Amino acid sequence: MRHYNTYRSDLLEKDFYPVVRSYYYRTWEKFYMDVHDHEDIEIMYVIDGQCEVEIETQVFPLKKGNFILLDARNRHRLIVEQDHYCRMLNIEIDFVEKEDIYPSIRKLVSKNDILAGLFGARFTYLIFKDTLDIYQTLKSIVLEMDTNSDEVELMVYAQLTQLFILLSRMIDAQKKKEIEKVTNRYVKKTIDFLHQNYDVPLKMPDIGNVVNLHPGYLHRIFKEHTNQTVIDYLTHLRMNKAKMLLTETEIPIIDIALYIGVNSRQYFSLLFKKYTQQSPYEYRKNHQRQV
Image 1 (tube, rainbow, N blue to C red):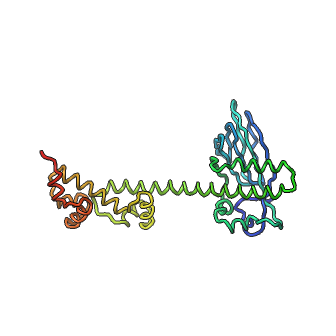
Image 2 (cartoon, rainbow, N blue to C red):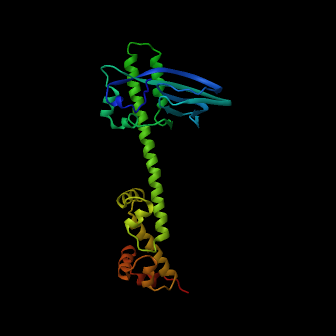
Image 3 (tube, rainbow, N blue to C red):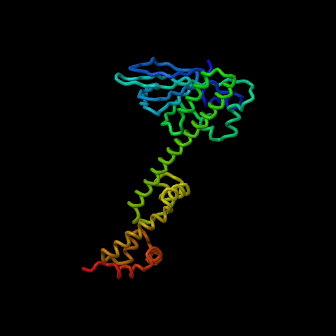
């Protein structure tokens, strides 16, 4: 039995072309679809209302402007609960091997790297909020299919190509968003660690080990997110703590250096003057509270 997944290797080895096997507009009310699967890739777009799509044992709520891209042969069903309705545009896409004058999927991917996010990536389903006017492209495909004009094949091919590019952009944006979430977690973990451990000597390999990242990669993502390096952030943190200790306490300057994780009074003085334009002694003299 054929299995036309988007990640089928021969889609990128031979010349396959997309075709629309079926499509419909329909409004569902209190509807519980039987569990089933398709040989084709399916897009279920919610035009209005709300519904749920059950895939294997998971249930995903969808509302207006949401759509699901479901790969072939994945068992699923549509659920519209009582007192709800769901107006949906559904389209199923297949791939056929043939000779044609248009660029095949393989050739399209070779000319546009972003399409590799859709063709060549393994996924069971992808759920999106429509941010690129996918609905208008789907609607244009369906309307063109209904015309039976001489140009219908060319027009549908062009619109499917546009659809694939838009979907690929959305997949790319989703991946970048996930990467952003992960890197944000690493940056936050690093900042938390620095605030808790600024008072001990620290080097980049030490900090990288704590957050389980290569020091070079941590340096890059930290600077991208904070506009300063990890060491600069740590130094600012230490200098702010030193200013507080100089103004609020009588702790000897040499001890303050140790309190903030700097083992050398001379190095502490150089750092402090770089960040405040004053030596620790001058700063204490000019800013210490009068009792």
